[in-house]
Image (cartoon, rainbow, N blue to C red; front, side, top):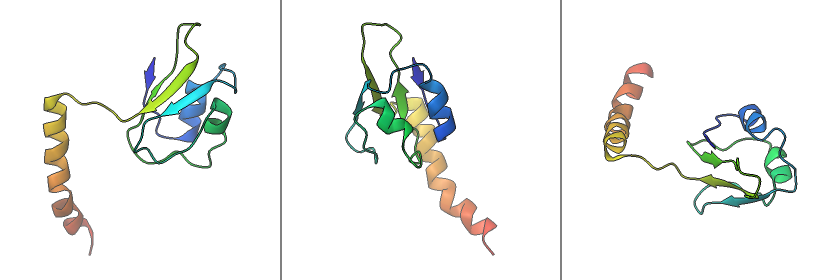
Length: 95
């Protein structure tokens, strides 16, 4: 299953029932360090970003992966357009 938790509480709900010793793989470029689910659960904060948490459903798979999201070309264009307008929006809200 794939999840995109925004908070530690959401992360912990996604991992409920999985053993703390389950191995964790984190894609390079994501600002966190954890080797096991116990390490993930012990984080003080979930880093900002749209990280994708791949949690095994099949009992044979023993690795939880944290990866950067992949976007379709249309999603990437939409995100780029919104990011381009962000400074303009911020300048309107800041006195």
